[in-house]
Structures are given as structure tokens and as C-alpha cells.
Image (tube, rainbow, N blue to C red; front, side, top):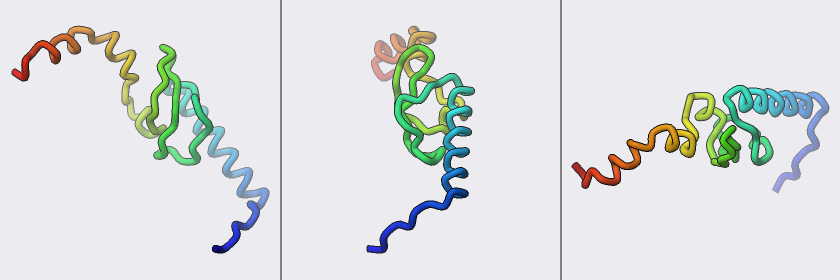
Length: 89
């Protein structure tokens, strides 16, 4: 196995900027991190919604409008009852 080389200061700075930008984008979408930055926008990340619910999603999905299930369920209670009581119809 080839040992990993230490990161150069330039690469460390680039990674820090990516993390900072990822956190900004997450907060802009209405969420807070519940775990450390995963390193990429398409990697799973535990995030906390403003309602307090924690879920695992990706930054890409959150920015794309994927709703918090807890918020969606509280805003659409009829949809929950309709699907449970429809009997498959």
C-alpha cells in the first residue's frame, strides 16, 4: 500500500473553502449540520431541519428541494390518512 502524502497548504485551503461553502449552502436551504461535512455534495450527510428532525440526505438533494419528511407529514396529514385508508385503491 502506498502511504498517503501530506496535503499541501494550498490543498488544505481548498478543502476548507469547500467545507465552508457546503455549510453555507446547507444553511441557505434551511438546515444545520448534524454531523461533520462529508467532503462532497453527493455524499450522505446527517442534517437537522428547522423543525428539529434529523435526517440523512445529500447537499445536492437538500438544495434540489427534497422536503423534510417530518415537515411534509405535518403539512399534509390528509395524505397520510388517505394512503393508509385507501385499501390499495
